[in-house]
Image (cartoon, rainbow, N blue to C red; front, side, top):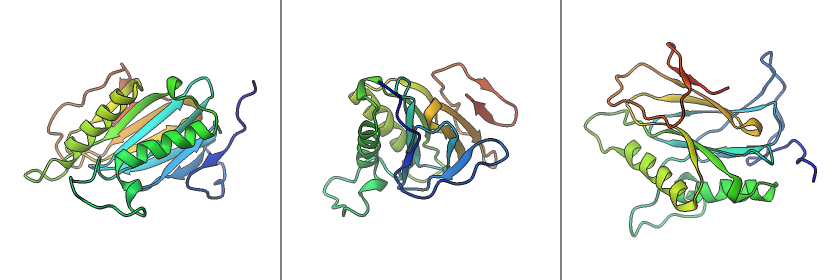
Length: 198
């Protein structure tokens, strides 16, 4: 069985041109997701309390990323269809379904999780709640979590080469990190604040 043809989906848009670094940079904003089997496509997103889940099927060489605002609606809260994709409970299923549609298998999916910062001390710990939701979702779905960079008080910029399952995060160090970040793998931490898995 041949590998899937290179593609980018969700949201549909023209492929950007290849930059000097050899990648087609595609930004993912809150409520969006992207899936690609093109090794030149690099997804990027900026996170505060939000979460980005990066999923990868190593056999299909296909990956995807989402960016969601909150894990789940509050009990009794009504969410219209236009806003559902901002919640992790929907965003995760939409991303997985896109990947399955293009050749991935749920049993082969692997995950990286980023975000969940609590940027404003003294306010509700939305980032902590978001991170807990994302970890719990993966556990319930049986998707192994290979890398996580969650929590703290700093924003993050995440880059993900979806077709290769490679990710990189840079922490924005304009705020004090409240707690150490827990990482499941043993990537190299760089002095610039980057966790580089490329």
